[in-house]
Image (cartoon, rainbow over all chains, first blue to last red; front, top):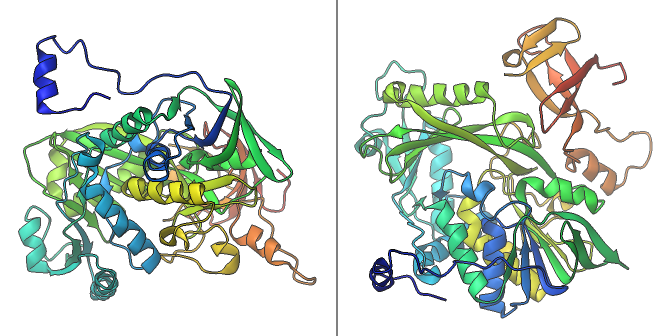
Length: 418
Length: 88
């Protein structure tokens, strides 16, 4: 594989950039693989990469019904954080933060990880107390957390509405300084290129139509490009999890919902990190191009449509305007939607299933992007060793029936409210 | 914007309604032994169908009645709505 560097850039400039190697091949599927990963998104590509790199399993195929990086890894708002209260979520995502910090070097692909901090705003004394509790839990797990007062928040976001006559005055906030953003497409492409160079077959435009199961053990998948045998199969299909679960006669603690995001026209640097409004569903950051990147609520009813509905955007931006009145003068450039695998307690599932050789990676709700490296890392371990790693042992499928929920938000099973 | 036909008030805009989830979920009968699996299915497990989906809606800013709707989860077309005691 050609190494990307300033020297290769200069060298290729002499031939008008016409001689770059392809970043990944377009192979026809083999008859059999050791492992098939279904879903060529961030998590699937990362899983294949870590299977090859950490576990030396390279006879691997990624099967993707569309094109790689066309789903949620290309649709998210690029936020990376580990500001969780529960030990299992905190430890899992803090391990992921360490992977993020080194990812550009590891993949030889600039993922533009930019740890500029995230502030969750508080709008009441009760919320400040809750954030103090969450911040303390984070610090006990070795995650950086700073409780900010109103004046300290003002230093970070002086353009927010700090007047006293607003409905939800800013009391303060909880900051994770090491959180940030990254370039989402680069994450998918970086993992794909490295996985491909280690022998992983990336098979695009190939839809899984069914599974071959003999005596409770998976033996392969039926696809639009024919049958492919496999010793092990991993599902990394986010919003399509329920569709594949139906083909496996499984019902999962997951519902599929649409989440929208939008960007404004680009403006000069204005907002450094990520800010979330604590009194409504709204969060905002500024991209390197200068666009204000915003999102908030789910559309509020089960949806497989990868596009959203206007009332939700209006609702989200109403909250945004209450916090940042300057937004009223910006034009929206784009809105889009992606479909989320909303789990019933708001935490993901990375586990084995009752079918031997079938592994499940789902339930990411609207926070899958930040966990891309650690999800791939732990899922690869789960597949290779046929048992969960310590980091994902509590992200189990049976935690619902046994009552060991990871209900970070404590909102119950109304997934569309979250 | 969805337009939803409330069985009591007629066609109204989506803003007047709140969603109530999958209407096909049945609470286990309490006058017999209920297994953990049945509780699990009732509380957590959902089919979340792609295509025709029967679901609950609440006309929260209108007559405040709950009702059932059959909607396509991929196209959002609403085929029919019905009162809670009606079959759909």
